Image (cartoon, rainbow, N blue to C red; front, side, top):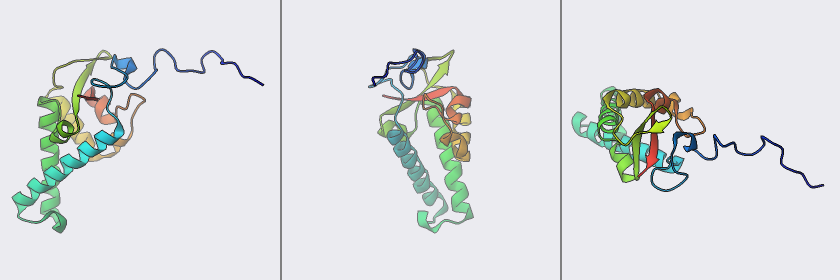
Amino acid sequence: MASSAQPGTGPSEEFRFPGNRLGLAEDGPGSVAGWGRRVLALLLDWLIAGLIASAVTGKPMWAGGNDYNTSHLALFFVMSAILSGLAGGTIGHRICGLRVVPVRDHQTIAAPPGLIAGVIRAFLICVVLPAVVFDRDRRGLHDLAAKTVVVRR
């Protein structure tokens, strides 16, 4: 028995792909970044912050310890806040071909998000949980709170 499509069962005009509601492209530059690139960028940023913390504390990364762990997290926070807020992306974002853009009234803006948005994003990423709860536009709670979205360059 052939089934016919019922009204309302397919993708709505409002949501056809991640970023559609924000006026972003479906794929290519300016489209919402995929999870693989975003996770790789995060790991690169964490590694860079760890290397700097290792140099500052004089301890190797694998040694750990309270002073190293605190330095590592603090450096990651500062680096993420400043770079994503003022430059539109961290070192990991740049390496992975990503950028952070602000969203205002469901439209993206070409300028960097600003330092306050960077601080909000970085703080909530450091808390971890907000970064793993996301909407259908692939915006985590940290992006929603900072009114940003990560897109491909």
